[in-house]
Length: 258
Image (cartoon, rainbow, N blue to C red; front, side, top):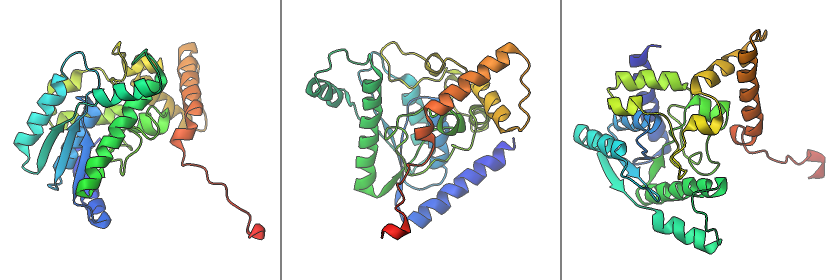
């Protein structure tokens, strides 16, 4: 992949989009992961006002990677500002209201955390007339739908959603993203046991990328048992999350009813 050209293209695309939208800048949530780190740096490179927002919820330890990345961006770009807003009290209040005592132990509460972060991003976006920037890659967004509907999936634009995880890593290297971030294992940070993305998916990003490429081929030659099992897992995840991958269905009323 021609990383330099891809980087330039994305930055130009962002500039064109914000001009058309007549918005004042961008707001993006950072986690210390490679996707949000790459995306936030690309957005910062537009020179438009950029607010990077860290939103911890019930963190046992400080997320030093997100803090380091925020420091890196604010020192490198004068258009970047950083805010940290702890949403733990808000999340605890929600759990009290719905009478849920086993905090961070269920998928529905993991999704609530993601949606609280979305609400916070849009609060700041609305106050400043900014655009909320998504950080999902192609595998997550269009392969297996590994995101929360109206959570981290609730954004205004997706700069890296046409890049596979491996391609995001190429960009991270070209952009000199912190080595610790490049080497860290992907996690959505929504679980108390700090489980990784691959633990949740039951399959690696490399395997998912392979399966997505195989699916596009007319002749799906899968000879090995392991290859078949990988492709099968991918198809199960893809079908299960089709409702997130596809646009929201609209009930079209027949013209002769009108």
